[in-house]
Image (cartoon, rainbow, N blue to C red):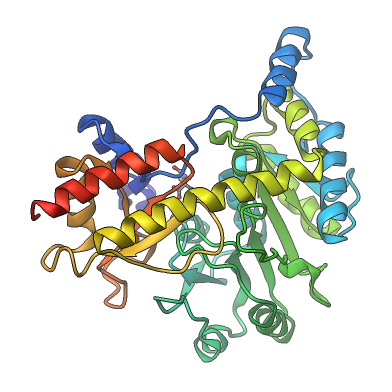
Length: 391
Ligand code: GLN
C-alpha cells in the first residue's frame, strides 16, 4: 500500500473541478463553480502589473506585506469598528482556503471536536479529520435554512474547541441574524470554545441587509478569527489572497501553521489588494448592487421556467428546487444532465453534506449568478427551451 492518509485517499475530486470540466466538455454555460466572468477592477490589475515589473519579487514577510496588513486592519475598523494590531493580529494567506486550513491546523488537536453547520463548504471537514479531530455536523433546514437552536446546543460538549460559521453562507445565500449569532456566542462562552468565521462573502449582501461579524458581539473579540478573501471582494478568484484577523494569542499560533503551509504569497498581488481594501464606499455598494441585480435576473428566469427558488440574501449563489421539472433524477444526476442536455452547469446541493446523510436535500441545484446579465439571460433561455420540450 502506498503511504496514503486515509482522509485524502477516500476523498473524491471536489465538485467544483468536476462540474467545471463537465461544463467545458459540453460547451455549457458554467453556473457551477463560483467565479465572476469579469476580469476584476482594472486599477488594481494595473497596480499589480506595475509591482511585478518594479519588484520586489522576493519573499515578503510571512504574515504579509506591512501595507496589506495595515489595510486589513483599517478595513476591519472602517466596516465593523473592530481594532487589530497589524503587526501581531493579521495574517495574509494564499486565499481563504489556506486561511481555513491554517486555523484548523493551529486550533485543533486529535480528539477535539469541531462543529460544522451543514450545508458546508467542502474544505472544512477533510481538514478537521486530517488533524485527527472529529466534525460534529448540525443541519440548517431548507427552504429558509432555519437555524435549529436545540440541535446546535446538543452538538456542543466538553470536547468542542471550534465552531465554523460561514456568513454570508455558501451555498445557501443565508446571512445569519443577530439573534442566531447571539445564540452561537452564548454557547461558545459556555463551552469555552472559539469560532472560525469564514466571511469571504462579507461584502456580497443584498436587499439592504448588513453583514454582522460574530466577532462584533460582546465577548467574541477574543474567541473569533475572521477570514476574508480578495478573490470575492475584488472579483478575482484566481488571485488567491486571503486574510485572517485574529486575537494575538491565536494569531501567533496560526502564523506558525501558515509559515509551513505556504510561508507567504505573491507580493505584487498583496500590494494591489491593499489598495483595493482602501476603496471608496461606492466600490463596495456597487459590487453588492450589481450582484443583487444579477441575482434578480437569474431568480426571475428560473421561476418562470418552473423552478422553486429559495431565498438568497448574499453570496454568489441561488438555490432552486427542481422537483416540478424533474421528478426522477436526484440533484447529482440532474446537474450532470442539464450540463450535457441544456448546456447549463450547476452544483448539486447534497455535496455540501456528509456523503450518505439521509437528511441532505436531493432536489436542489445551486446556480452561480456572478456573471454578465447577458450570460445569465442566455442560460435561462437554454433552460427554458430545454424544459419546454420535456426533459
Ligand atoms: N467557492 C467556490 C464555489 O463554491 C469554489 C471554490 C473552489 O473551486 N475551490 O463555487
